[in-house]
Amino acid sequence: MAQQSTPAEAADAKKRHTEWVQASRRQIQELLLNQGLYQRVILTPLAPVDNRTWGEVLPYRLHRDCDVCEDVGQTTWNRINPTAELLGMHTYQCVSCRKNATVFMLAVTSDLSITLPSRLPTDAHVQFRRFAVEKVGQSPAWEAPLSRTLIKALGKEGKSLFIKGASSLRAGRGIGAVAYFRRIIENHVDDILKMVGESASVAGDTAAIERLAEATRNLYASERLKIAAQHTPPHLKPGGHSPLDVMYGAFSEGLHALSDEASAEVATRLLESITYFFEMWQENKDRAERFAQTITKTATKSA
Image (tube, rainbow, N blue to C red; front, side):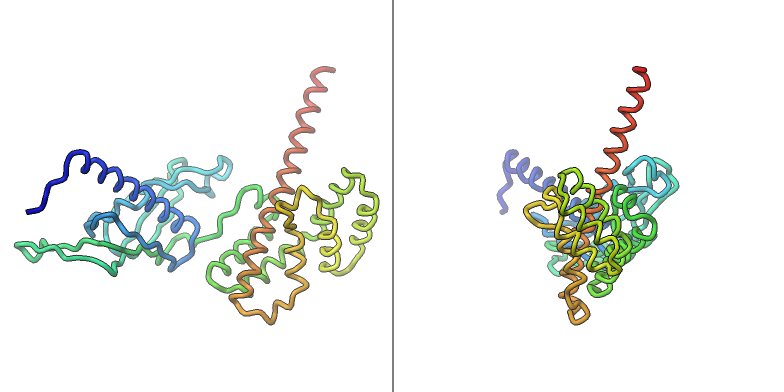
């Protein structure tokens, strides 16, 4: 005869199960928001989970940008059709506008389960000891998440190229991802020179200013980028790593000879470098504009 657990043991088991559920929800949230199709998470509950109630680990709500409510930042999206089906559609709707919705199709499979006996065959059910949740569909289609700051910095075309590059990278098409990211750099190389030049002016680095001014007359984007990388200001080199060195490397390396796997490593570094550099650039511009506006208003009132 199985020994019954004490109230303290039962409470501890309940607490640990709750912690597992919360951790699992975070993993599935990452899957829904940031992973491409056919990606999955593997979950191992502390005790077998009824296959008819696996939906307990599916997030009740998500936090993401809404194209309809684009001026209010991230909004809350509630799950509006809870289901525990092993292959089902799960809809999340923006609670702010109640117009925008995203549908995820998830498949749940188990490679370690037990079937519980029952008096009636129709009542028999399975419990999962380990199971996988896989994203097999999404509408509207998944797009790489971009901050509003990065969208503002890259512009409409840059945003489109970034999404295509990030999507290619997620799908394992490293060569294609590098091509998209290189286009972004080529289109914004003059902006890069401008930002580095502004930093050189603040630092009073006459030699760098002259060199950067000379670079603007160079016909080749790779040479202009090389000169900008050589004068990357210290505050844009966290840990001694320059995002401009990474960008220039993407032009100087023989990427056409690399495999998709090797190109994916280059593309990953480019994605992080582009995001960091252009977000920093845009944030500095926005802060400067806000400061100038505030000082101007204050001076006008004082006058």
